[in-house]
Image (cartoon, rainbow, N blue to C red):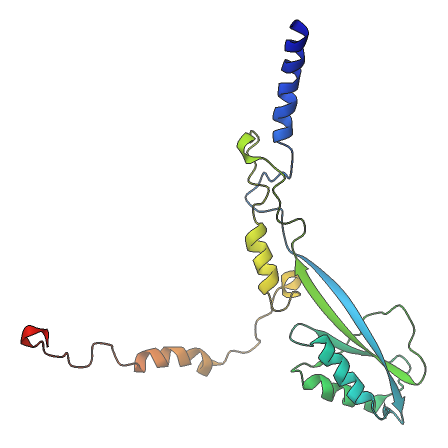
Length: 210
């Protein structure tokens, strides 16, 4: 009987310690923060006479359509040998149809560009919060002043999902160099010109509610 009591007494601290295991977060800022990753996609296009070879512009448009190119994507041309000076304009025309501009800097790709061709590289960033949701810590046995292990998962996961350009989470968004006073005054002017809701005459009440 004494042996069983000693065994039970030794297990109680272990059970309490096990209830406190999990993700620790001792501050007011969540440790679950968005992580931005980048993926590069490349397509080699044939060049003829400095311009894109026949049919290559259509192939590029089909590839970009399959990629669902859009805001936040970065498109660059890797042409180390200067094979297609006129081809840059052909690629820019396709990219412009998606509302984007060519980037000046092309990322480094693993394979070299084949002679007689240029490489179009699409860089796409993605933001996500790893290890969420996180219910690894038992909040009912909290003796170390930790917040919930899942604290910050919801708001930061929503932020990562809604941000149009994940790169803004890394570098931030620079403001415009110039200010358009007409644009800033437009909302104020609309508010001032709006007729008050009580400007019209009120309908007279008739006996009997008719």
